[in-house]
Image 1: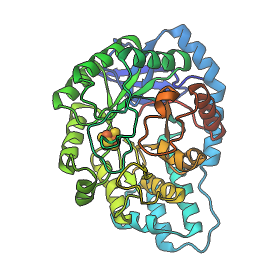
Image 2: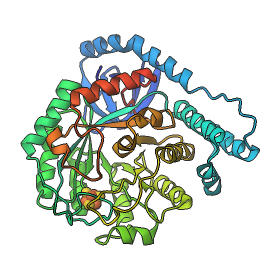
Image 3: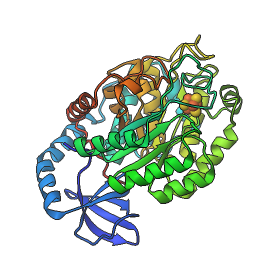
Amino acid sequence: MCYAIPGNVKSISDNLITIDYFGEERTARNDFYALQVGDYVYAQGGFVVQKIGKKLAEEILDSWKELFFELKETDTRLSKLHHDKTTISKGFLKIISKATYGGSISREEAVRLLLSEDLDELEVLHKSANFIRQKFLGNACCVHGIVEFSNNCMCQCAYCGINRSNINLTRYRLTPKQIRDIVGNAVERFGFKGIVLQSGEDPSYSSKEILNLIKMIMEHYPVFLFLSVGEREDAFYLRAFEAGARAVLFRFETSDDALYAKLHPHSSLKERMRYLKLLKNIGYLIATGSLIGLPQQNVETIIDDFLLAKELGADMYSFGPFIPHPGTPLSGYKAPDVGSILKALSVLRLIDPYGKILVTTALESLYPKAKRQALLCGANSVMLNLTPTNFAALYDIYPSRARGDISLEDQVTEAQLLLRSIGRAPTDLGL
Ligand code: SF4
């Protein structure tokens, strides 16, 4: 099973194409290929990433046909919205009902949902989030692979174990050749179509080197390329887009100005916002979000984080738990419990029925079965770690990181089994 299903081009309007997947139509942007109606393509994140021959496409589609409908059936069954809870307040149900019909919920309503501790209410909230995900986005689940290519960082984020003040950490930097081999293995052996290149803010990996790396990857591998390399000069992001990168993972970590300043002595929330707006304007797909459970955060500020991410036009949300690292100034604090993160993800799904919601590795690190739970609470995107295990262990942003010691082969098998068991197609069909 590969991580994308080829689709058939039905119509073309400038660089927007309509693609058919077994009778289901999606739209994608085509920036790279000369296409005609009837061609077969792979799309990821709403972009065409590869054109493939008819014979090969039909063989792959043939192998998918039964499974595609079987998965849909399972997902529809698991996401049915029914409950027999009679004790739930009318006010709570009214908010849920508004969201399930596609209405937007207010800040106060979102706060009300996130404040709930009632088990019956929470069950309805999670079921509704899963129902909304299925209704508006179907059963597609993005599976991207992430390469953590350098754990050097010049920043001082107070929650991060690889911040520059941590002198006890062994630092590494993968060479372009190592990165290319990792990407090549993921694409050719396992069929990945979406790759994230991530590092700390490492100026010794020059912008020119990263641009060359993007060009090399785009020349050899048909992938949807994400960048997660932090604050670099504006011209770098313009040139990276020209070189073929189409998405950025760029979190703001908190929308609370004062808290941001405390946690990031090297930067400001204003500057972070400037970057996010710039990146959106360039044309990147934006994945953004914050940490949940930070000291001095409260229910209102978490909802403000969600609303800010939505206002920024996030295409994908990345909200994960704060996990204290012993080598940081926040070592004395506690991580939030898994339930509070699942609840937050469900509320986020009610706030935005259309955005992709990522299950972060941090959530899985709190509780290994959380990936399944999060996918049933509104999430629809996962990342597998492509970094070789000896280096992944050194990408120590928080302790006991899940996936760091599991081979890619095992991660892939596990993800396939999980997605199949809950009726999700491990693919990204576009918009
Ligand atoms: S969170 Fe990112 S930018 Fe901040 S110290 Fe860690 S790697 Fe560096």
